[in-house]
Amino acid sequence: MQRYAGVSVMQTDYSAGFLRKTRNGFLKPHREPADKRREMVNLTFRAPHGQTRRRPRIRFHRPRKSRLFFAALAVLATGLAMAVDSFAQPATRPQVASAYTNTGAFSYTAQTIRPDPVVYPSGVAQTGQPLVIGDVDAATVSFAYQFTSRLRHEINGTIALQVVFLGDSGWRNAYHLVSPAPFSGDVASTSGQLSLSTLGQLLAKLQAGSKSAARAYTVYLQPVVEYEGVVGGHKVHGTFTPTLPFTLDAAVFAPQALNLRDPSSQVSELGKELHPAQTGDLTQSVANVISFFGLHAPAMLFRIVGCLLTIVALVVALRSQRRRRDDVWSHEKRVAFRAGRTLVDVRGLCEAVPPGSIVTEVPAFDDLVALAVQTSRPILREPLAEVELFGVDVPPRLYLYRKALEQQAQAQRPKLAAAPEPQAADGYPEVLRRLRVTAGRR
Image (cartoon, rainbow, N blue to C red; front, side):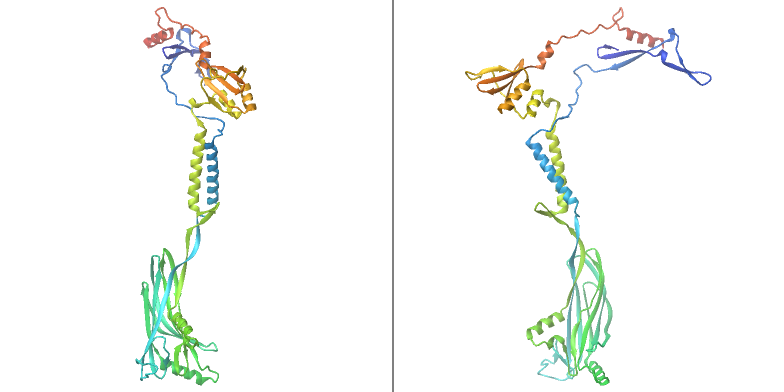
């Protein structure tokens, strides 16, 4: 290979490397005659020295014992622990919460058939008053239903009203006072006529048919509300069947709460029976709150924070260990760092020696480091034009080590002269002249 002004020229004789196929299908070496041999010339163009710009390589060395590196490792460990602990637990958990409420209100009124200024001064029996069978023939009973929810919902269903007879012996009979009627929305109501004379006749038949028949029966007004719909994105369906108990005997038809002796208990119990309520529950997914070293937060938040801390700490740790090519430590700095000593740059290391000090030269830098370790002293460094001084001040002695700079050592190396390139008589390179002649023949 020959080189001319940045152009590398390689001359190759390939005439003896050909294989030719014979008639039988075999391959055998073929060598062309000497007058037909050709030469291959490979030209490699290279840019002149100093014009190319190489990207600085990133080098990684032994871990630096810096505060930033150890702080990054601590944050990395914390982030990893937080991420592992949060990912090991579910982000959400099922929770049963009250989502809606079914409420109702019983009411009844009755017009007296004969005036009774003591029991019914206004001539009308109101809700909560007993109904005397001889004075009241029929009563209008009503029930108002309402569906309540803080969530978005759509409800529809049917509402009916029935009367249930229940005896002390367990005898039970029920009949529909109002047939089921459909409704749509949050509010529905129903009302019907309850004949007290019919109830008195039924009671008389029951008592006449058996000697052991009870003197009083319990009659329940029971609305039947069947609802279905969507609440908060969940399908719901159910039945709301509250009851308002009455005591029926031969003389009076009155709410059962009036049988209590305490007046305050009568009022509270009657209020509960007249205004029943029923809550409905839904199973919803809520954020799972976990604890990490005393901190309470949702698991999803710990996952995000843990991943961010891990990524940031890893980036900081890697960047703290990365050095570019121009930041590569010298051999002396590496040796001092491994020994736990620090290089301190100073000026006038030899000129500012205190009086009475003894300057002692050491043959190797390792010996100077050993002295610095034994005496727990820093290593002083002063770069000069020709040498680089390293010293350890141990009064009254100053130990010095002199290191010749690499530029001076390279300048003292003898340069080897390049071999002259073969040229033709006219000064033109022989290989290029042959290439030019071969191109002219073609």
